[in-house]
Amino acid sequence: MREITYAEALREAMSEEMRKDNRIIFMGEDIGVYGGAFGVSRGMVEEFGEERVRDTPISELAITGCAVGAAMTGLLPIVEIMFSDFITLAMEPLANQGAKNRFQFGGQGSVPMVLRTPGGSGTGAAEQHSQSLEAWVCHVPGLKVVVPSTPYDAKGLLKSAIYDPNPVVFFEQKLLYRTKGPVPEPGDEYTVPLGKADIKREGGDLTLITYGRMVPRCLKVAEEMAGKGVDTELIDIRTLVPLDRETLIASAKKTGKVLIVHEACRTGGFGGEIAAVIADSEAFFYLDAPIRRLGGLDVPIPYNPRLEAQVVPTEEKIGEAIESLL
Image (cartoon, rainbow, N blue to C red; front, side, top):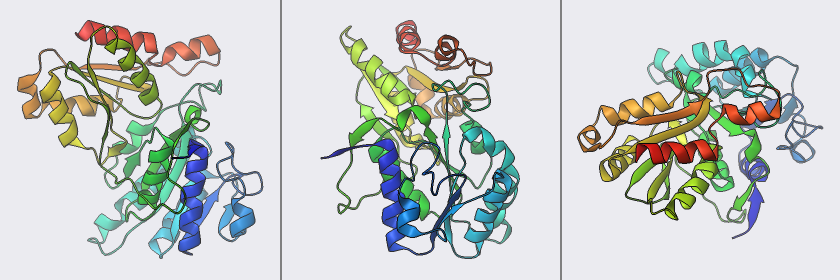
């Protein structure tokens, strides 16, 4: 199977579906001629034109509001918010309108839109361009939340998100854009369903649950721990909402020990929800130790690269947490 980058996989997903369905439009700041802040949409305006690939004013509120309205009236809009930090400016139409439309009208309406946005630290973009805010939107009923970790999943999950009748917030960790991985040829159609976790590595000593940028980092640590005789099961949850509770519970019952790792701040992070799901299930009676969470520090992301690197879980911290739990 060929290997392409995470960014190329996203572009392929959008382009392939736009060729098949004229209802799909793409909106955002600098996504047209410039090709997007991270180059994801290069060449798309040349193929699809300015009517379907729309450069917008610098107003996340206006962009998202237009997308919600367009989705309500039959289009399939994809929005790119240049940095996930700026969903703070888009929350009114996203959380108060888009997320609630189907409920308000008894399922007669739908808001099939995707809000794509790069998040996370690691690029030296400092505190206002480096946050991981996925837990915020998970708290809003009616929104689906996706965080792919590989090019394969990025393409397959985005295709599924485009046709979902609910608003989907699609987080893309910035450091993953240039990573490469196997993806089927454009003619080989596939999708990845929302709400299904992926067991990246099977094991029996400990369950390691994570998503996004932390997946390759945790996988590397799991392989290193195998050299020490520790058999780690690694689960990439892929979609936070809906959450694949069955896979998490089954793994916790099998291993008896659970470590949850995410880049976002530990306090209020999505790891707390994962821990509650396991603790509230029959898996609780199989646990040999308390569920552990390893998240980012509860501080704004520093600009200094050495400090920035230490704010989120490092390979060393993940390894120490595994050894401590065992």
